[in-house]
Image 1: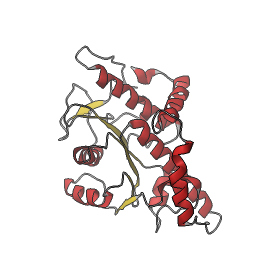
Image 2: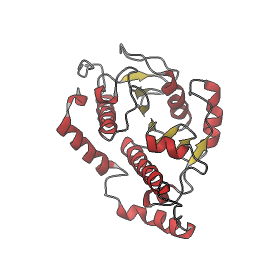
Image 3: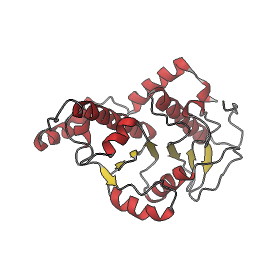
Length: 252
């Protein structure tokens, strides 16, 4: 387990709040079954130019704490005295989007079973269920090129993403971005649910696809079913309360 280290006097209040929110998110992902050994990443950009927080390579999501998160610059240099390394496969992809997309405050990448399954079939996500209809026309796709450790793949990732902020990496998994961490969280949760339901549906037979006109109405009206406070804020807060009933060590 990670050794608890509390906020030092040199750290700004804003950074500590970002660390706590991100650490809570790692614990929420683990609680929801979205861990992948010591791999996969959730990153949050700080106000400082080019700095962002990433999980320490070697810790399971269930071990991440606010103080153990690693602060790095956009070139991958550590900006704190963390004893942990950073996974290059996570740095290359996340730094690329944090560098070029001002609205990509939080980036999440996972290898969930359902996410990888749907990203590995022709046609990807289909508008065959409630949650999938949320994303119709809003998902980018990127061909699998192997583990993402080569900088030169970046141009193609950006080109394929375009103006979208949700991507299925073919044969690989889920990638979502948000202007806030809760916004990215609710995108990931909804996309994961869409993928789970599609996998279940396709196991029973040919899925019923929703008409494009109905999808348009659905997307138009979605905002009326949201709780005030910003996209995903109430949802994420509810999940953090559940995590706190299990373990509060992420706050350290």
